[in-house]
Length: 395
Image (cartoon, rainbow, N blue to C red; front, side):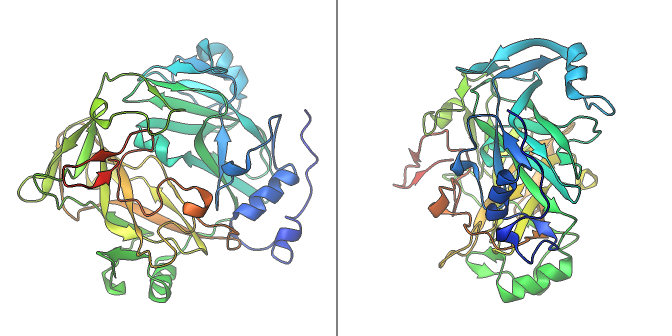
């Protein structure tokens, strides 16, 4: 199938708004598909893949087992694959991706971007919570996950299961894409004003005082380690567990894949090197409809650890009704040496961007969002469990 012809402008949904800088809302993303800026061979993109400010991308029918990760630089991805591929895994009816082995999977979606539109990608929340490292590469590029304005070509997803051996199928979505017109990063002053008008950060349902916001080119979040001997404050992934089929939801016993971590008396834990942890943020976050957010990797100068694979926070996260924000799930790994985390310690940063327009739908239950108003840690693949106090949770 040939790509549709590119046309100028965003059309009726963006009338008189084509000069607005920012992230495309869902209605603009749908129009971008109609214009052929995002296109795919059959089957068509499912409506459920359109999120408030992003589009879920789908795996195609085969995965290439790689000798090593790479960037194409001045070559096409296909040319690089001729030398680096070590075999093919058929994903039509499901294929197994082994732990600690990189794979490259062509995606069903192609891009034909106008010269004033760029794109960026990130893992979906469930992907990051399973310690599956993913990033998109494109032809003739020396960057991961950043797609230059005017790009015309296919998208390829590098997939590295770091903890679990997984089974994936064609059509499954592991990552997301956003379309962006120019740079629209919110300044710290923008966030202060926004927080005063409609609070974006809460602790125990009380807005954090504006003067207490930890801001430095974004909003910092701390970890919640205020647990007791009965309530775990984190979960650590078990290695060498059974196969995890990503097409199965609410299907696995968490005890087969995770072990609980309890805080020490001083409300702290010690991260073991190269182990993968999931921890809730101490604060609750609310993303107003006029903003989108992205979790930035933690600055390694503040400690040898990495936080958060899954980066996109859509408009409406933790927002709506009487909801006073939602906790963020932090995906954490220490490197080289054991690392102590203490309750409230700042370990990650949310960077905000303006939307081109308010999305016609927001993140939440109405659009089937899996982690709206979450107080849970693990992904939707694990069954709920009683914590012994009559409370059902999926941790």
